Structure formats: C-alpha cells, structure tokens
Amino acid sequence: MPQATDLRKMFNIQPDPEAALVALAGNPNTGKSTIFNALTGLRQHTGNWPGKTVLQARGTFIFRGHKYILVDLPGTYSLLANSAEEIVARNFLCFARPDATVVVADATCLERNLNLVLQVMEITSRVIVCVNLMDEARRKNIFIDTECLARELGVPVVATAARSGQGVAELKAGIDDLVRGRIVPTPRRLVYDPEIEDALARVEQQIPGEIKELFNARWLAMRILDNDRSTLDNIRQYLEPAEWGVLRERFKYCPT
Image (cartoon, rainbow, N blue to C red; front, side, top):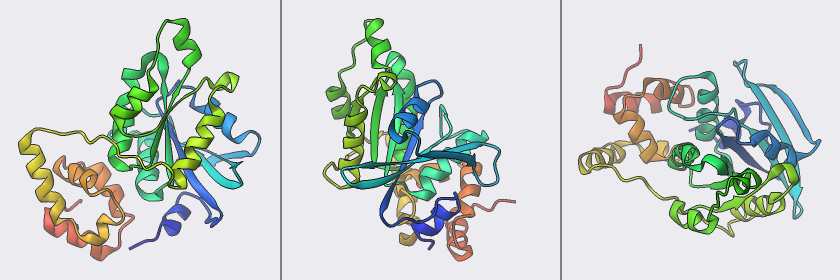
C-alpha cells in the first residue's frame, strides 16, 4: 500500500514533515485565486501538474508558528466529469490526502456552489467551507447564516471578502484548528434511496481493509456502483497490482 508521502511526490509535492498540506478547491469565479493570494502572499510559485497542461499554483504560509503548504486546485464545477481540470482536482483530493481542504463558495450564488462542496465531503471529512464575496452578497441584499450552514453541513464555515482581507485571519485560524484537531468535522452524509443504500453497504463490505485505509470506502463504493471507468482507471495507477487484482476480481471490473 503506497504511503501518503509517496503519493504526494506524484503531484510534485516534496515531503516536509514540518508542514501540513492544504488543498484549495472551488468553482471558477468564486475568488479562489484571491483567497490563495491572500493566504500565501508572495510565497508562491507555479508550474504544471505532472503529465498535464493544467497550471499548478502552490504557496506557503505560517500561522501560529506552523507551516502550511497550500495547493490551488483547478476551478471545477464537479469531480465526476472527465475534463483535465476535474481529473486533477479529484485525483489530488483522493490520493495526496491533504490535511485540510478549503472549498471556496460564492456567497452570491451559494446554492450553485454547494454541489462541489458535497462532492468533496464525500471524499474527505477534513473540509472547511470558505463563503467568499460576502461584500458583493451584501450589496445584493443576500445574507448568509454561516453558523446555520455549518450545522447543516457538519463542517466549519468561514465568511470572507478576500479582496479587502475580511475573514482571512479567521480562515487561517480555522485551517489551523482543523489540522491540529481542535475542530473535528462530521460531514453530513447524503442518504439515497433504500435500494441504493443497501447496494452501497454490500459493496463497501467487500472492499479490502488495506484499500479502505487509502480511500473513503463509501465514495469508492459509489464509483464502483456507477461503473465510473474514468475514476476507477485513475485509481488503478495508485494501487499495487495485487490490490487492483482483488478489486477487479470482486467487482468484475476489468478495464481494456
């Protein structure tokens, strides 16, 4: 079973035992880049994701004496389609296993952004939602009850207006609290029809324990039920041949 440090090297993330890894996800046009710049300042650089023409932005920041490596994932509306940007974002969340994932949402059209929030929460529980553009929302007479939203989602929610710096310190504090275990999110689980839930439970039981250590078992069971060949093909490259062979045998999935 590959270790987290080995998987991170595949994304050009060199191991740093003193630093926590934080992913920054979100729809396009949510102010995600502004959040990235506000958190990292000038301590950032860009390149390409391995094997992709998609740009990778990475930076660092220090908070409460702790170092954080922040990776700005490509802006996406979903993690389930097959564009290069969506594959990069999905693979990083699944395989690099960041210590925290910040999902940036647009306060002026929050309902459109929550789809990605829920998809990220299916992969990892270590999520903090950043509701950005609060200043624009106020100008449109839109008011977001972030405390209620946090209770509904089961993860911390921070309101920001990144262009003016509003909420950035609170976001850093939220990230630090999440990474240090002072906040333990309990993401709301989407419940499907009883027939689907029963099938998910049966598939999840058959996933080997060592693979459950690498992936969220429920998320993987959903991808198997969907016969999501794109995602499963990507999973294959991060597993040992024997581990993939077990999945292929148990679920009759055999890519050509």
